[in-house]
Image (cartoon, rainbow, N blue to C red):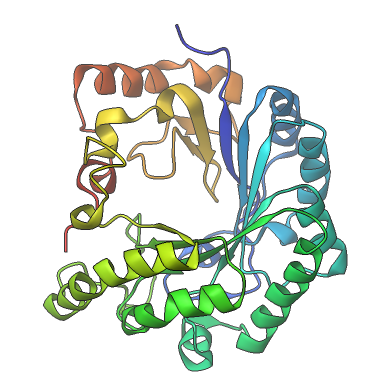
Length: 310
């Protein structure tokens, strides 16, 4: 039997951002903010949630973020994750984020000034280091985790060997190696090419060392590289084989379209005209559930089915 509502939400609150990153097309689209009606509905769902992820655009540019974040804090079992470039985190937010026990996921796609600033147009490397240090000051008082999110692309994959030392130096709990999940028509052409033999050879040679070093550092390393998944951690290699997203989560993207998860191919509705309650057990969500139950992966993203083959 289906739940009466999701156990987790991934919510883009706005498409607005203070940066113009090369691999992101969100800021180049029509400016969008989550509707007030949807905010009220999300607030009503919060008491029944176990996980919620706030993202954008940049979450700190949303006029609704503070209200929703504070509402979520009142649910003692709710785990919050905030995806951010970190540059708008001040002392107030550093304290509130850590006091709540939220995971703060910094988007950092270069561990040198040159690479970081060439990818994250409008950002200062010194600025993100200051934000990390500020959060870490408050982490000394309150338990909270930080994640370094690193989107692989042609201009940064050669820095992979330096990511873990950087993460260790700056106290990150997790390193997430990511790749482009959806095609970005307006993005810079130097997006990480999965077909690049040079990049594949480099990653293949480095990943075993990264995995063992992450263990030594005590850093959780997440990635989509199928060849290097730990066989002891899962008997399966396909996320789609064990996918629970259509039964557990909903994702609102930076234009208001709703999917079970950000990787899912087809949207199930639009938060501008549809209610989350109506979409939860609506026709398209049921189609996702039926397809997965039958072993039909036609609506599943390639990353979920195969991971990244290098």
